[in-house]
Length: 439
Image (cartoon, rainbow, N blue to C red):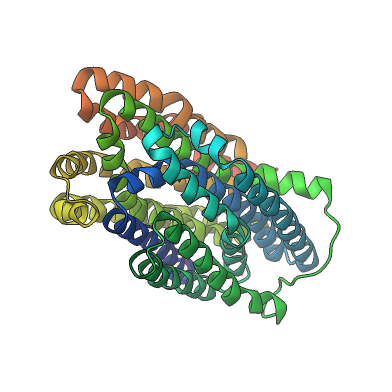
């Protein structure tokens, strides 16, 4: 009966979260389709140049969401509701301040940022235009992600899903209107994304304002100790997205060196397609996080490990299904983004190779968030460091020398697999759970 209840809870939380992330990533794909077809391949490459930075912002929001959410769910599980509310209010207040500062910096120093990101002369103008308009909506972009996570931690996973879908649908509709009807070009895509996030926030706010759950808004003084605690726990989520940004940046640099701008265009198409896989896998583990954290507060290790096992099995099934889709429907999916036969052929080869890496990616993401829920972020940070900074550059260089251009696309498979093996050896999930619960 306990296993049946566990599975029921998993579907209640993980499925809406995964679906919301899928819809969210789908509007990113639609963004790519509209930009590629409505503006051109150079605009597509420009968006990919900015991608590491926008992913870093998503990572920052994830840090607030997971770090704060872990502490909130843990305290709710321990029946310490007042403490959970105080943490939520501190996280939200600090997020408002942080997102406002980031928005101002991005608007003022846009050119310098895209230069650091590696924009070529032909891509710089488009990249600047996209990032500047994206930055205007930095506050709702970050708040939408964080509030969605807190609503999930507050026992309303369906509302989190509905808000994300509402924002995504708004984005898709406005993408078409701004790019094709108004001719706003690449900045139209950025504006549509921002307005979509405003809709997401609008759907979420009544939950807190009308006191539909435990968590409510209110003035609170930011405590340095609490700030440090949720930042330390949440940092691996920022590092995880940061490591993804580093991976994209390294790929962009290597592709410019060995293939050129067509390689970047092909890689941007791959990112649009595989982002769907990544976000569904990430959505699964985000959905399960409140359950693991809640049971951590209750000191129920069996439930925690049970949820981890279910998530790993689910992510493996999803990865397998995704690989099949990429192999069978790859050419059709790529054809949506570009009509250039060279880019299309390059992208299909890359897609078939890169999609296989998501078997290891899913397990690595699950492990990363699980250790955050255990309040053992050092192992999560180690995973991020290995997969992006250490193993990926080595994998890319070795595989390129052995297999040529195809080796670039296979670099992620090797780096993610090595990360999985290393973490499994260094930190055993079952042993770590027993240790932290008995402490």
